[in-house]
Length: 115
Image (cartoon, rainbow, N blue to C red; front, side, top):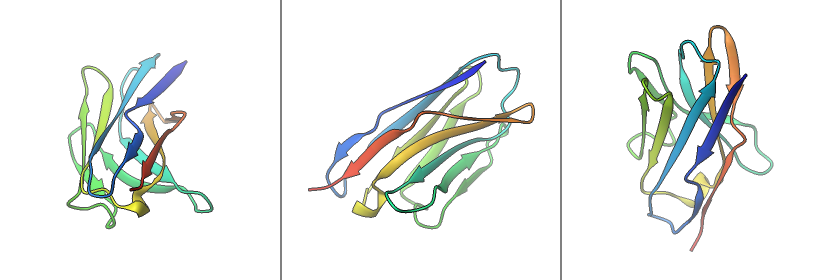
């Protein structure tokens, strides 16, 4: 069984920063891609950023230049550094990984951007 535990969400003012972390544990043999999604109220879940085992990254246009995804393969962790946060970044952020053809989700962590 695989578990993903996210942390780092919270309330931040516009222009502020947060760092999200996700730790994978359990029966993991190898992790291919690690991703961060987000879902705001009334909206569909969207892919924010992803990183392959080799370090190749993808960012949604809305976060390019502000967010940075990173991973530690030895620790099976993925982080999302979020800078210059905007009110429209407010959402529940979910960690997602795929390992050996299976996809796993974390429980989500709330990010609120408000003055």
